[in-house]
Length: 278
Ligand SMILES: Nc1ncnc2c1ncn2[C@@H]1O[C@H](COP(=O)(O)OP(=O)(O)OP(=O)(O)O)[C@@H](O)[C@H]1O
Image (cartoon, rainbow, N blue to C red; front, side):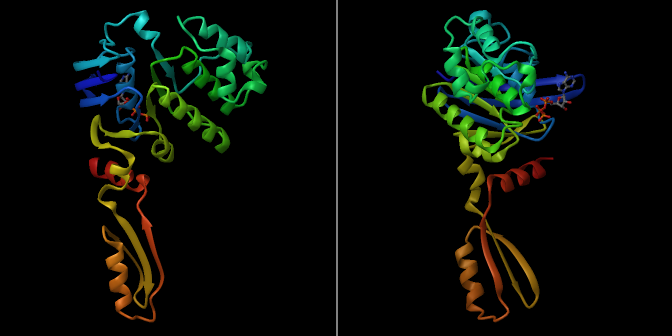
């Protein structure tokens, strides 16, 4: 059975439709990316899945239960890393992680989690003395200490330095390899590309594209070919760059220069998608 099954999910605030008929299915151990511009409906969707917001209509099953009606035992199977921290400035990292571990029936070892999140050296430090990126790592530690079956990560690496991001990616991959299902909301396209097996792009409360990063990023396998000749600079997007380059070279034009082929990134395709859908 799928970990998440959603059909025709809808939610409006007053007259404004935030989620407009979404279908989703996520299997155990998947890292599923949710992308979309500000206001697309990502948080609303995720909060409905977490049981923190009520839906207007549609069916939602998360770990076999309806989040709108599920209880504490169900909740203990989820891990949530929110965009902002609940602050406890005078506690140390270790105290807070141990405290939160106490809420779960079968938590992971707090010290191991602290180490996995790259915080071993800061375990005895008070939260108020941490940098922004270190606090964010604490958020991640709190999200995984309960050994969740399903982990929601909302912009998890905001404020991380590049090394911390790479460490975090390794951690996420190892959690997914261990069978944890992960819903990743991120504005960093490279992060989604690196981690997510599948992703959905949400615009205006609707899914406008869904598939693997390769399906979406390499959709149609388009490349952009740029070059310069006596008429000036040129730029063409094509599914067959080799044929274009061959035809350019057949012209035998001595002014031809700066010929370049760029494969379109997930980010290029994403920007087109959200532009088209608006
Ligand atoms: N509690 C609320 N009351 C009224 N409108 C809301 C509420 N929460 C969200 N909205 C509106 O619903 C739409 C979707 O918001 P949501 O927070 O789900 O977007 P998002 O994709 O998570 O955006 P972001 O990337 O900025 O976090 C927005 O237009 C937002 O203004």
